[in-house]
Length: 290
Image (tube, rainbow, N blue to C red; front, top):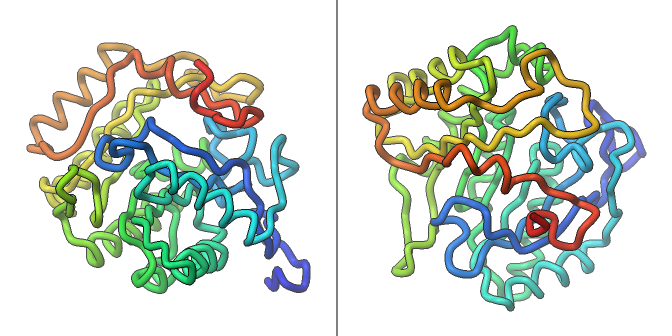
């Protein structure tokens, strides 16, 4: 598949800079947001089709609702403006299918003497070879680990091989960065791996399997961000059971397993967080509307 020849693959992305938003985001994990927030570059389209995606306005591979075709100069201008407001990091969100663009942006920033911390914020469905090529460019890996259940991955996201692919990807990320986070004097991350897991309603067995894999196959020292923010996205076709939020009983069971496995490094969300993570990419600041 040659995007320069206008060929498109599964994600239906081109060779240019297809962007949903470039914005300051303060809602990330504390070590990533830091004092001033992170400059996040949200790419459009995706290599998954998660039926419950909170970013569905920009992530659908067929005609996303919101998409801007930017030039590299325009992307740089927007990033630099946010860095000049104090942000110390640039995050690339849903970057798996846009790795050449990620590398070009980082090299262009370096050409201007800019060396922000770079955060690769992916869904975890990454090829090991692609991650190896990114090693000189990325400081922090922030992957999801969505599933350890093949059937669930196939049903909800269209990729039954997700567990195997994500397992290999996370192993490679840890191989590159190790288990310990490197922080500066302000407590802001400079290097490391943080694995996110979103708890889904009615799918607690999957969450328990995710935690057990991380503790037993990677290390209990791995840093985890356990998320309770699931909220049924409006205007999407959901499978039965996903039209509600996670219950307190379900979340407590996952938290108990996390404690039992000795997973002490990281963060957990309050159940009320589901009311704070409903972005609207039609706004200049998608996550600051509630």
